[in-house]
Length: 289
Length: 335
Image 1 (cartoon, rainbow over the protein chains, first blue to last red):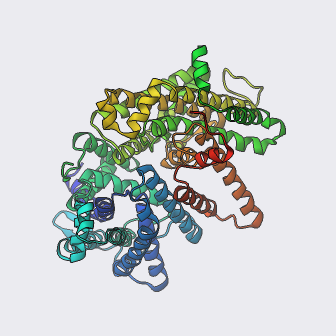
Image 2 (cartoon, rainbow over the protein chains, first blue to last red):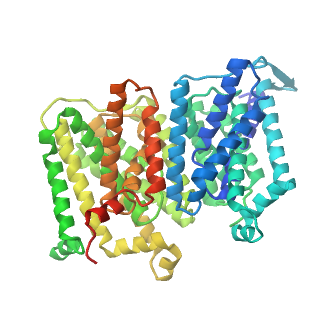
């Protein structure tokens, strides 16, 4: 197999992986702080994707430019979801939280199915077929822009958590729940804010993802799973870990598609997951509990 | 033997025994007054009741959340079907292979998870990962049909329990027998030393360990018992539906459907999985009827309704339907 081809596929995999990473980042933020596993994560991304599809279809608005308003809308949805439904569940057993979010996911998937039908939708942007050549590597323009956008959102998120008072307060909640309450932080409100941030993240990822894949209402659960795999591989609660995990899984999928059959690519992601769980349960960049 | 039988009824009020007898009698006689459609609904309800009971052993008794039980259903269904179609071994023998295969899968997952102390959410994810991994594996396992599916010959003939070929009414009684036996078996477990060890592990693993319970061994036992029980649901699935698609049988949606019954009915209770399965199945069918009748039967409505019901139960009845209902009916046991 020519080295050029492998290199090309690998670069494509890494770029897609960055978008995966952004999606997983949302999950990691939510779990890291609220300690609730968002089993409706992929479904939230689908919501963002449909928002982008509608905006593009009706007004011709570019999904990458719509990233900010869609993320804002998802923030509101996430905030409301946490403050009304999930906050009372924070101290309930895991299976109970899981069932609640499964119910939310079911309503989202099938609500979308009712609204948009089962057919695949996509956005055919004007630069869909453009590409850049760098030495031997040919890079699709959409993939490059998608990865850059994902990176930009991720950087914004890092900055938010490191620099803003709200970001610091959220990190305080994550580090020490009781301590955060003692110093007078409104933990429940911060949880809602965090869930909103996580939802905004995955909404932005949806806007970007819509450039790379077709969307149907049914893809949600598969991406929920993928986000989990990535977050656990990278290390739950570690933000750079989520990006690294995303790149790793994106790369493994691309190479598996090249060397084996594309439909078997999922197996490699799960195999990586099992290996990580057994050999380094805290994840590649996670801290030991 | 008689001591075991006496222990089965220990602490159960007479009222509860009578109620249980009535429910069982009603289920025994139900086919006499059911048409083909109602019978098919009841078969599905019993299927979920049985599979839910099996899952409940692992989660309800021992506190290990598995979200990948479709794996055991799937491998057992394939094992029994392959034995029958490829080598002409009837399911009466083939089911032992199915049980063995499912238990082996359970043992491997349990061993890896518990040896490396993968627990909680991580454990749940590991079970999903194995189910998905196996699903994709079977998709490419062309000898067993691959993603194109594996089929059993549909024959129209008199009931034959050896080869499990026959009319729906036979499947109904097979499933009823399995459900009843699983109920008794679980009752026996909860009254036994093993059951108490499991409850201890569920409530507080470290405390259980401190008391000298071999946590690893009993968690393994829970997974193996649960996967072995679940496998029979798989054998039934293969011979009742006569077709197997990896995409369907191993999917995460199947695993979730399977655990809805016990969670809605009442986790860790004996009657909860049965009640939950019947409530859900009957409700789903009623909703379909109403939607078809009123002309709103567009794809997705039913599942949205399902999701709403699930949310309502989880929010307002955290213990499930059965524990409060039991109190209301005055069926609480003597203690």
